[in-house]
Length: 265
Image (cartoon, rainbow, N blue to C red; front, side):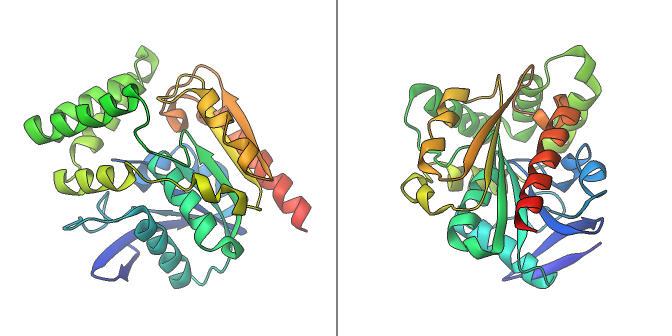
């Protein structure tokens, strides 16, 4: 089991394939295991690096607050450990915030950004976002991770055809350490890099499910801030796009990465 020590924590990661490096950064309550629909497709052309963020999966749990900037620093430390100077970064949900932060902190090390079902700002600027945040806090504090896991999995994968995947998601989600989950949730809420989006000169692909938690138009409005960004919308998908529309997602991402690589060659 490959691990690297970053500060006082051990971070677990997996690598597959050869080629240009592609870092996959998972979402809140998730882990590298949840990229099972992407790693086989991506590793046929890229060196895929899939870590468990500190606090999740097989990495050490969090015992104190950990900011989005610190998560980004963890990813650069992992890349240093692997001898990777520059890579593509694909961030999903919470991982999208980490990816945006990486692109702003060290743009020379980021070949391109793929941002799935995420935003450059997690400020609670409307009632829906505030309700979502406080609902999660309440459930975890009062009832623990299992009820939240059932709620999240049913909302993300409601169709009967995804029942087995939803059950698997709920089981993994329920295993999250309560404190680690809450610290990560608190880290992303209020975080924003909107005022620095103009610094992102690398190609940026934002992808949104048509039924994601946040509306497509909210993502679209950020395109004007970035000089080399575009948005793709995936139909008939909710927040769990890597599961409910894996083939479509993989095709969009691989075509984008091939386009970036061709431009840079």
